[in-house]
Image (cartoon, rainbow, N blue to C red; front, side):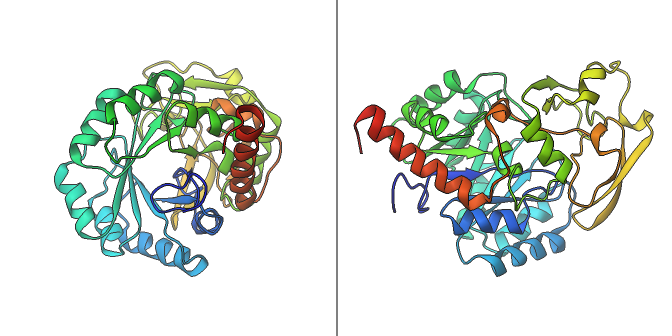
Length: 332
């Protein structure tokens, strides 16, 4: 299983599902081929046939297992059905309740279930539902963040909750490099899940401007001004771009539907208009006023200095962690 492997993977490194379509087949396959667990992101609407195509495209690029992330706040039953019928290795769930029955159904299809949680209460429910691993997300994370606890305090509580049950805990939120990886291991995690670091990779489907901004800028803000109509009650951590700095507050009774169209994107095969204050980050197809669009990033963004191939991100994390543990702690 290699050094610090989890869930049958060579390494304990997970690439989180990046919406709306930033973690596509190229990124997920690159992570899988490097020994990590990559997650595609299911569409935010029922599109099982398109999702099957994404899965097939990924399988054409890797023979290793991978997963699909589904946001339960959006219509998802048909998409989940497609994941189970395709017997994808892993189903990642976030932003919603799920039943023991769903976990049982997944297990019958040979699919492991890995929810992302942002609180101890959510972790308890996940354990009771019989999940295979848990991603614990701290408030440091980029994108839509459900919890209010920092990772360093929440993670060990979930580790204690699980005790000696065979449910690996995966740490997420603000982790970018080997130091974060080793810190997570010290807190009791068996693996780490990275988002922002994988947006800033060669294979990510993010718009080149978005990738460049992740390198150039180093501050984030926790806000609710983006995408209020599409996804209400889902605050987000964004990169502090000039647009965000100028528009930090939007009157509570306003949302993107009141705003002008500033660009267009093709997302999961659908043409979409992007309005000002929409919650959709620019992908490789996006045209228009890219600089004014939401760009999600976790608090670790200041540690990201270059756009790298995803496989190299995985290698550097593993080698860096091994080196740190040997040098600083005299172990392994």
